[in-house]
Amino acid sequence: MDASKVLKKHAFLRIDILTVRLYRSLMADESLGIKVERKNGERFRRALVDLKAFDPGRKICSDGSQIYLPVRELSEKEAEKLRLVADYDVVNFGFVPEEKILTPEDILGFRPSFEIVGDIAMIEDLEEGEAERVASALMSSSNSIKTVIAPISDVEGEYRTRRYRHVAGEERTTTTHKEHGLRYRIDLEGAYFTPRLGTERLRIASLVGPTDVVLDMFAGVGPFSILMAKRCRWVVAMDKNPVAVQYLRENARLNKVENIDILEGDANEIALRYQNAADHVIMNLPHSASLFLPAAIGAAKPGGIVHYYCISPEDDLYRDELLIREAAEKMSAGIEVLCESIVRSYAPHRLNVVIDFRVKKL
Ligand SMILES: C[S@@+](CC[C@H](N)C(=O)[O-])C[C@H]1O[C@@H](n2cnc3c(N)ncnc32)[C@H](O)[C@@H]1O
Image (cartoon, rainbow, N blue to C red; front, side, top):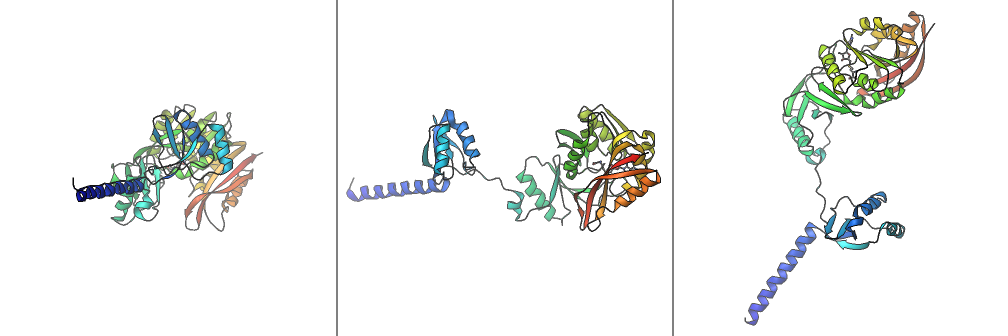
């Protein structure tokens, strides 16, 4: 080979090597890592996580008997601590970045407002096209969302239900929702359900004792009743909506709850059959709970507690306390307010609040 050909070949080789280096540095730029024996890998990873030194943005790598763990810069003290876990070397390594799962916000450029019930995402009723764009972003960022719907009505009527339009995915409003280790079959169009009361349900459950009887006057598909039944002696659950009652029965079976009476009908009538029977009365019908106060107070045992929910203006949150005192007085009973707090925001300047009160009977 003559000298010019050798030079040309050499030049190509150099370009090749540079290209490979550039490619490698683009795909996996070198960064700080720790090399440990494979058998100590998991123990070491946990120690790094505890020290908040592990870099979750890069992938762990291995070659035969060694593991490479991506880390940030370590202080001397941290390095010493890690020596107690196992022998290791600090290295520069071409870690591959972890693939970032795009969030809806990354895709859309804004954070969409939505709520998840089971495998259904409920988004706001946006303009045609925009709703579809939000739905597609939600579905591509989560495998567990199978359906996207948008409300086309407010929560309305005696049964507090809502109508939805199908936006994307499977065309249905039924799903199975998990809350506090329990499962609920739900039809979002057929009966009321919101996951936004999950924390409140847990608060009530923490107040209920193993010998208690609980009366749930507006039980819906059962998220209060079934959780309480797991902790108390007996639950009496009622609802006027036949669809809610059908799901309530199904949910009791699904969660193996047998210490429950499920009744379909008007709480004002049913509660009359349970005079002085309940340690706790749950009144989750915030728009018209005051109309059921005599029935609730009547059903509470002397010393029993009523959990009363209502919607209030932000400048007079607990105004219903007056209605409660008046209703008790008419029944020659007294009340002691135990707790007043905000449960969630409801609408501009309006909040969903709870008033827990003890019923004192002569
Ligand atoms: C706001 S929802 C609450 C449901 C349930 N507690 C929950 O947290 O999902 C109120 C429920 O009260 C029921 N309801 C309305 N009026 C009623 C009445 N007069 N007697 C019994 N239930 C009634 C509705 O059908 C609805 O299921």
